[in-house]
Image 1 (tube, rainbow, N blue to C red):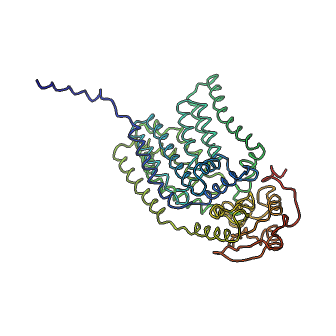
Image 2: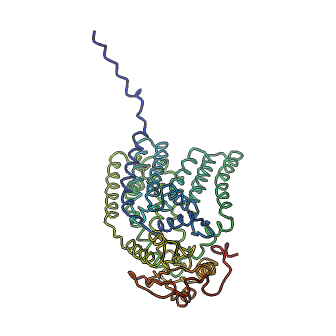
Image 3: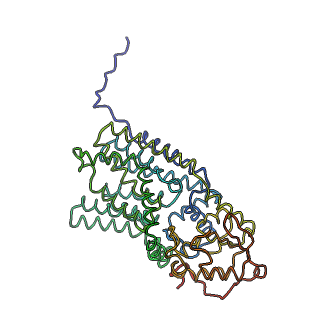
Length: 513
């Protein structure tokens, strides 16, 4: 007999297909495709060059916040150092691959949050739209393996853990975000809001606060102790007062802020359009979906972007996780037709920015290569060089050791952030920096000094210490693409001192003591 036909199971009894085997490969593929341009160049911006040079210095025995300094926490320099130790320091492809993984991790956490609140369609919307929007910036900001891209998984993880009342894990994630970049700690505000809203007052709330506080404080304290408390505090908190001020550069700062805000809005159009529609139409349930915790997260992130008054394009990446959730919630309210519109808008925006990344000029990279070639011509592999400018990638490209722990002129002159001439000079540099800088160059003078100021307000003619050093001990040998190359005079080649000796101090005020 033929077998009896199998009875069809009712639709309600069918088991739903698992989400992650379908969604996760899509997120990985999209992240790889959207960040493919990052692999087409050795590096995209000076931040990558700074981190690569730091990693080499650390591998050669340098000490973070002493003989290797920056105003950032240590996790990303350590990440670069670890990648170089495993894969070599001739290429940045390992950290670029790590950036792809960071985008995927952030998208997956956002998708999980959206699914928990509004279902699978919202999970797809949050994850996919975040990945597409993550490259919606100037290419040098969107494609670089910089601090913000590695900060986002920690901020998303902090909110994810707080949403599930896992307060110790939430605190650890907040600490991780801070140790990538100081502004990552802003996610603590929405985490506290979730704790206050979801935990009853009294002993349960006090216990939750204690667990959250322990998770936040203990990792930061351990890293600070490992790096040296005073040095860590100086370079990550107290030593950036002049850097965070925009006095005298108001119009310059305002122009950059407006320009990069417009670019970021265009790149996030797939999220902003449905959110604006939901706010304008006020569909039923709007307050229950677009909740106060998400707005708190967005507001805290906006304050983090504004802090310091620099408005670099990559700062705006911090806005994307809360925007992705708000956009997914808006699509949940608006219905199916809006999902298609949002997807098309996001895809078009992403395509335009990827096209921009493909055709973007490489003028600054080409200039850094020419300067690096000049340094390599006049200095041997073990001879130190000083690149007086804002392109620390020249050290990495030249494969020559830096003569100073200060890898850019900005640390010594406050030009960092593109100041237009006001509050730029020796007296505006990091506290104790010029004393340390003079001691470094006196005890072990570099074979080559390249003046790469090219008319900027930090030119050696405006810096008495450097102007004297060049006049007394160096001779000009060539000009390369606007940069002036100086070589140590032969009579000083065997000398270990140039000028008056000073006690060698650590970087900044903490080391100078």
